[in-house]
Image 1 (tube, rainbow, N blue to C red):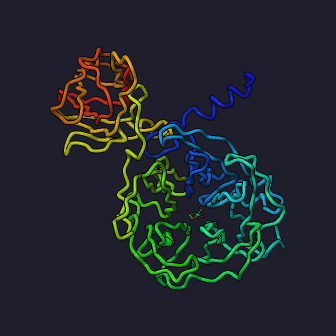
Image 2 (cartoon, helix red, strand yellow):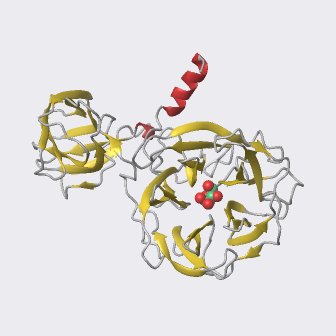
Image 3 (spheres, rainbow, N blue to C red):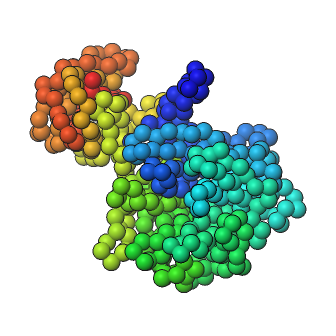
Length: 444
Ligand code: FUB
């Protein structure tokens, strides 16, 4: 690797290595399709950007390209960079910034990336249609086909390849449509039909189909009330009829109008990938991808997923542990806010303003050797003491950090009283009433 490609690789890794929610914090990401390819999780999201005069429709979705990300462990994420752009697809009208929710599947040695967008006048009718880009590797390079798929009018493509090799395409246009695909994966083999057996009222979009233990699951966002929630229906046939089976995730607590998702099994655990507006609290069309564990009941029904900040990945003790992505907090005296409301991408801080206030942060990996001390990145006007304990508020004391008084953020280094091994939950506890803001803690 030469100097320039090494620097580029380091840049792509920087800022995206997150074990918590949201997963990607250096750009907006939405509509996550997660797949397991070559032993890793590959994430194919949409890429929200903010429209500016002359570039996209103001105060609306604005998406010009796609990035692909991968992770060997749900903790370390690599951004492989841009794979398809509105300017590199021959049929896309590059003034529309409408590269909406994509999917990617593997078939016969190739990776097929499906994406909706708006065609230049005359191609395949007006409005959204679906194109295909093909690669030899899950991270590209992807070569877009010159024309979109004939006969598909809609958004949010999902392609499912059944055990017998038959491929199906699902997409949305108010309702959810399904059709068979030919073996070439780029042409319809049957006319699209509406899956009309789903709840009749309210927008349905973002279909994601998979099979588990002989049950075909059609999962989809649905506006059953005022904004989208994630629902699912099941069938014994990929073309249906599907029977409504339940809600996977309730409407967003933040009020994000859309949700869009995928389900994936990785290393014997199922995960739900979805999105919310973590990095854009005032504008819900600049979204961020999240992941949480998902569980099936013995009868194949899906247990509702409660969104967490902590997410699904283990956090290594010697990385910055963002305790504001907590697993639990004390009933009183703990608050989480943005560090800088002028730049939400700087992330969050935890404020303690009461003696005994605490944060629990689950699943820290202490398999790192020779840990000697801990850094606490904090600021406290009057100065204060912060305890770090393992597993419970009265668990083994690792250190008491004496945060000195002052207006600036600074790290306080404290020698460890014990060296933990294995996987533990971490408690960070305020020992005094004087307020303190904490950005992160990190073992060295
Ligand atoms: O990202 C644009 C659109 O918002 C998607 O296509 C929908 O599923 C919704 O998430």
